[in-house]
Image 1 (cartoon, rainbow, N blue to C red):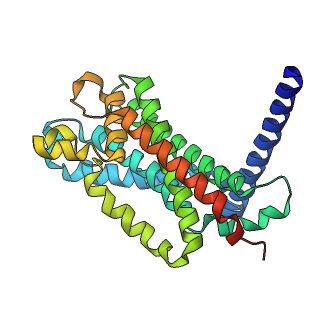
Image 2: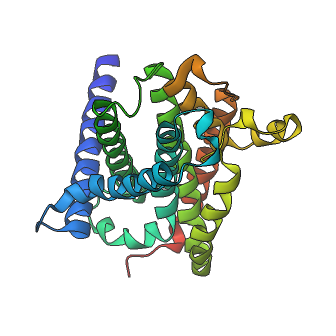
Length: 265
């Protein structure tokens, strides 16, 4: 009985993996086609944006350059921000745009959603690795001090952005006009997210409030992995994990209740 259950579970998991993989390939073909560099734009696009930001900060030399390497500082702030924007930002009307795949009886809205989130995460992760390798080879940034911390922070931020995207996907199905507010809200979050500063640089009273932001926690966690003991960081990983768990639970519950609002017509 146990063997039969495990075998069924493994078979079902294999089917779901093939479904998500197929949806990812479909999404790539629809967005980028087969011409020119095609799917490589998933990686190249965030690389270009990050490169431009790094170049500008290297030229103008922001005021905090005396405290730490400005290129490493921007890299460890802007790349997590890119992951956050690429995951949470695509949630608007994502379910409606994926509804045509529901004609296939094995495919669900959650499959289509996960395929897009995985695709965005893989593209941004590849961009991070390529940008870092280029800068490290050129001697512009140093070696990552705590790879485990850095990876955990990156995955946590990916999860957090995915959970937010799921909630936004459902909310925008209820009220289509709310999609217009997603991008402005993302920009409003940036000044308090720790992208261009570290919590330790702020006044003590402000530090206590900044760490309540789960995005700030993830970025500080990421910088701890990159810089190690060279900088002072303030973060509580389990606080961000709790946020991700609650948001995921809310998103899945909202998705289950919203199925009746989404039709194949």
